[in-house]
Image (cartoon, rainbow, N blue to C red; front, side, top):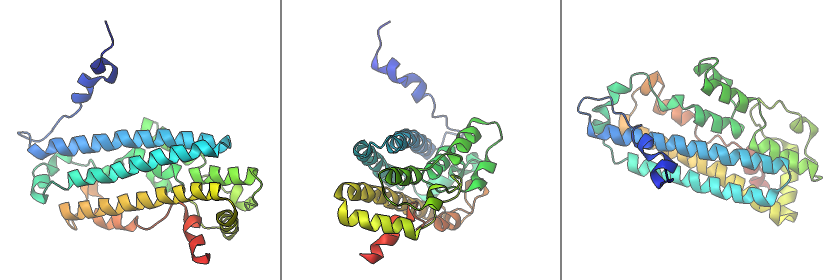
Length: 260
């Protein structure tokens, strides 16, 4: 049997994955399911690209890393744009099927937690939300115990002769990224003398800023949909999401700007 577009992409299986649970079903449940399934597909691709970026850092091929970062940034912009579609839904339209979600919540997205871990935002509490021995828990544990994009970038800089502090290079990979005066001194020098590496640093800043913008847009989308209600699955909803705002993944890249 010849390979066709449909067979290659498994279109029949793909289109069979949108199973509404509401009576009727309610019209807007289909949009809700598709948007969130698409988010998970994009998360999968971002993780795929981030793994390549880490491999490039470890192999000291920074020219290729810039290409990988550009692709990730385009995907982050796409993630943000999808909120425009979701915001066409009114609060009453969401309430028409919200009860069928029961304890399900976007808070439980294992791939988004993987993305946070690969960026160096490592909160061990997220591990406990997934059953021990499950696929999600296994993948999260791997990310949690592996170097972040930032850690591998600093290791590259050290290998290239830059004086990255030893305590930073030897920091526990499970520890969250914290600002370092020594790293900032190196970065300030790079911005003044190495335009090639400066461009890469700016792309990392773009990524950090893009994810913060997505978080902000996500907060406002939730707020206009459910107001101050408790989130699906018992999360704190808007209150929790607001607590995640303005916490950069790469703080050193932001700290150095005051000194220029």
